[in-house]
Amino acid sequence: MANQVSPLGTTAAMTTTTAKTGTAAKATPATESAKTGSTESVAFRAALDVVRAVEPRIADAIGAELADQRESLKLIASENYASPAVLLAMGNWLSDKYAEGTVGRRFYAGCRNVDTVESIAAEHARELFGAAHAYVQPHSGIDANLVAFWAVLADRVESPALRRAGVRQVNELTDQDWAVLRRELGDQRMLGMSLDAGGHLTHGFRPNISGKMFDQRSYGTDPETGLLDYDEVRRIAREFRPLILMAGYSAYPRRVNFRLMREIADEVGATLLVDMAHFAGLVAGKVFAGDFDPVPYAQIVTTTTHKSLRGPRGGMVLCGPELADQVDRGCPMVLGGPLPHVMAGKAVALAEARRPEFAAYAGRVVENAVALAEGLSRRGARLVTGGTDNHLLLVDVSGYGLTGRQAEAALLDAGIVTNRNSVPRDPNGAWYTSGVRLGTPALTTRGLGVAEMDDVAGLLHTVLSAIRPGVGPDGAPSKARYVLDRAVAERVAGQAADLLADYPLYPVVDLG
Ligand SMILES: *Cc1c(COP(=O)(O)O)cnc(C)c1O
Image (cartoon, rainbow, N blue to C red; front, top):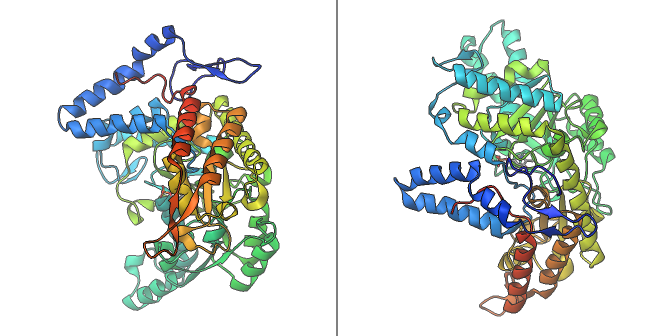
């Protein structure tokens, strides 16, 4: 960490590293006093005072959230810590503006500043990812996927129908032609990764609107290796002939070869849609390059902006010129009015992600995940696919005789925040599960490195080995109850707190 600019503040890192041992020393008193007077501290304290004057309980909850985030060892693979600049870009009067439409073509007057914000965010996104077009309005990842689904449906189903009918827009269709088109739009096929292999609910699963819109089939992973089997994807695609081939995941611990996925899509006439919600930061940081960068290969790419990309909560769509007009119809097609304050946060985060420091960060995220995986394997933990080459790993906790739910709850008792997750062909289903998903984007932002990952692996293994499955009120084995010795939980929580104390979260922010 020596001389590294902290992403969590504008001043230099508050911890110093002795190169030999890799251990961090606490900030000196001189930097402590600099910190309390930092611009960020003044800004956040003043903002909270303004909130407190109206509803003190909300100001208290905001302050308490900072304390909770500081104290917890966060291994949730989909979370991160946005910089003070990103956070502050969102708390202002840009929020008050309605701006339906796109830059320069709004349905409301007075949007010149929103135009500035949106065009800067889109420009950063295009440059960062090398995309021809970027649409930065989606409010979340699910919304980005909805925009993408309807852009593809409009391009490949609606536009041809309009051409056949000799009209320019849907309002000109006869009632009969409209009824036929509506049925056609609702009768398209999507192929995506199965949920238990790491796919996402928005990739055509029935509880989500995508599953009600599309006739969906999924591809899994090889039962032996746990790896994606491209021949199997091709076989299913040839048989099923989907309109959309989805790639992307939220719990698959390996890279995906998007060149091969595009070959398969082309072979069956499908549009390749890559949802990089989880790993956008690794694409931005050029850790995923060549065949593993989806942008050159997919016709359309969706993402969140708040996971490994480390921006505000939100979504984004990237595409080539062919789909750009359809994507830009996202609002009002499926989105409410854009959130200009969040687009401002996206612009700031994307500017940060274009710096060399971000590429270094993305590299450390993967190094840390590999170190965490090695530390766990060495201690006897069973990992899906045997390891990782991205930012996440999946521990099969059945090896410890536990369900994911027992492991997740007991780890929380010891101050470690994770989430349970299905493993391939999970015998415990999607609620109890047999896995715990771990990710390194958040801890890497705090500054923890490879040496600390081994300590974290030790803490995880200590707790997982100490948990005993509990019994229900009827004495039968329970998938939810567990017993964890209080002394173990307290000792690990103390060790986790000690580890985190060396890597203060938002060191430049002191709420006093
Ligand atoms: C997180 C995630 C989403 C949804 O993002 P939200 O912002 O929560 O709507 C969509 N797809 C994938 C692959 C994800 O991991």
